[in-house]
Image (cartoon, rainbow, N blue to C red; front, side, top):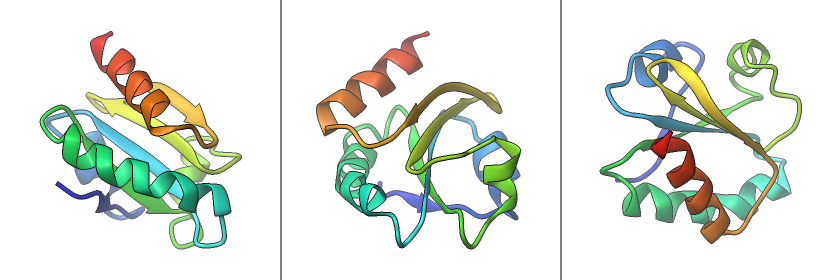
Length: 108
C-alpha cells in the first residue's frame, strides 16, 4: 500500500479514528530532507502495510494540524495509535533506522 495524503479536514477520520496505527509525515515541497526521506517511507508503506498506514500532510497547505501537534521542524514523523501520539522523530534517518524506530514504537 502506498502512502496516503491527509489534510486538516481529513485528519480526524484518517488518523485519529483509524483502526490501525498511522505514521504521519509532516512535510513541505521546499524541504530537501523531506524529499530525502520520502523514498524510504514509500518502501516502508508497502513492506509494513499489515502493521500501519503511512500518511503525509503538507504543512503549507494544511497549517492547523502541525500547529495542533507543535511541529516546529520538518520532516517530523508522528506515530498515532488509538488517536494518541506514541512516538515522535524529527529529521531524516536511514531506512533501517526508521524501520527499527517504527517496530519499537508499535511493540510498546
